[in-house]
Every structure is written in structure tokens, then in C-alpha cells.
Length: 330
Image (cartoon, rainbow, N blue to C red):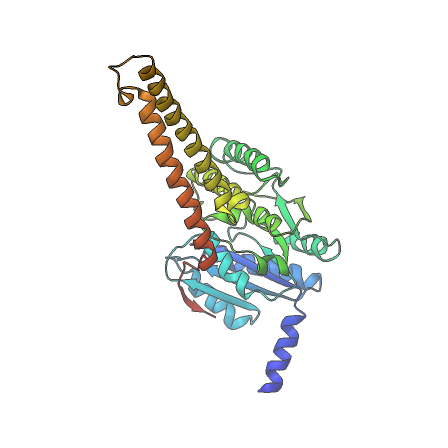
């Protein structure tokens, strides 16, 4: 038993690829997808494992994964108790990946497994931390996907500083150290390259990849993903700049607002004293709108300063935990 465990450990340490495939109701495509991956890897002499992550499917997807596992031991599966989202699916599989290069791809057959060898070579031989797929020619609806995607990617490049044309492409290759060093949460799967860059992995490039129309089923993502994606991008930009030091933002803004409010109130008080010294009576400071503006700014400034202080305390005592429940792993 100990000898078998040692052999298993040696095999895992020498594994070329971990291929991670999150899915939701993709029963029609799974067997064909595996067959193409297996053929490509064997042809190119690449040892591999596959992690299918069933993100709460209601069809026969999990049964198909179980059957594939029986026939092919390099297949593994993670089954979520309900739909948690792509980021959580990737996070769960990243923790279990053993390959020296990690490939992520979608299960809908719009990504081509035939791209895997070149992606692997770019990470392994050219020493890139991340190689992101770029669907130059897309076979999606122009108005609901292509045009919004171009606008979204343009905004993402400007805000993040990471020069990629297609943040949403599911086909990406990573060094193992990258996926083990980052936490993917919320809807941040689109911004894994940004998270990696913030963690110090700067060798990021992209590769034009083939794309085809979905042969089975329907897309699980609507146009609202672009709205959520943009809001996530703003969040990521803020967190990357001030996430580790919230006092630098809230404290600075709060202090500035308090000082402006205090100086405004001081000016009102001095003006009143000057008027009294001149024998001018009859008007109250509280009748001046600036009094309430000054008071509001001092209150808001104090609250923002306290928020920054509490933020500093929280990040020193807590860390975001997993928010998904794995029902079964094979």
C-alpha cells in the first residue's frame, strides 16, 4: 500500500497537464469533448488529468462523468450541491490540480482541445505565467455578445492595465504556481489574469484560438454578465489598489471632508463674531445653508475615517472563506 502511494505521488509530480472543465447541463458534449482531449494529449505524448466540475447540473452530466471515470482513471469529478457559479467551480478544481500546467476550457465544444499542445508549450517552454485565448473570430450573436464583449474588454484593459483582447475566453493556460497563489471568488473568473498580475505574475500573453458556434444546448450566460463583469472590474480595481490598506482611501477622503467641514464651520463662526463686533445682530448661523453643509461633511468625514479603521482591523483578522459546498468528488 505504501509502495502504491509512493508511485501515485511520483505520477502526480510528473503530470504534464491538469485540464479543468466547469460545466452546467452539458450532457450532449462531454463524451465528445473527452475523446478529443484524449486523442490530442496522446498524440503529443502529454500526461494529463481532467477535472470536470459539475456546477449544479439538473441533466445527466454527472452520470456521464461517473461512467467516464470508471473507464478512464485520469478523469476526476467535483459535484456541487447547487449552482454556485464558474468562479467557485474553478477555485475548487485549482485546489486539486496536480499538473505542472493547468488548462481551463468550457464544456460546450466552442473551445478547441486541439489548441492544448501549443498552450502547454508556451507556458512550459517560453516561460509564460499565463497564456489567455483570444477568440479573434467569434461565432456568436453580434448584438448580444460580440459588440458588448468588445466594449467590455476595452474597458477592462484600461482599468486593469492588463493588455488582453479577450478576458472572457474560457480557454487559458497557467503555471501551476499561479492557480495555487490566487483566490478566485464572486464572479472574478473573468479577471484571473488581473488577479495573477496583482500577485506578481507578470508574464502574461495571449494566443489567437479557434472558436465555433455551440453545437449543443444553449448558453448559460445572458447579456447581464457584462453589467456584472464591469461592476466586478471596478471592485477589482479598487481592491487591488486599496484592498490591503483601506485606511489609505477611506481615511484620506474622510480626513479631507472633515477638514473642509471644520474650516467651513470655523469661517461661519468667525464671520458671526466679526458681525457682532460691528454691532450687526439678528441673523443666526443656523439660518445659513453652509452650516448644515459643514456639519454634514464633518459627520461623513468621521464615518469614513471609522470605516477605514474598521477595514484595517477586519483584513488583519479575517480572510474570505470558500462559499460553495461540494456534494461529491470522484
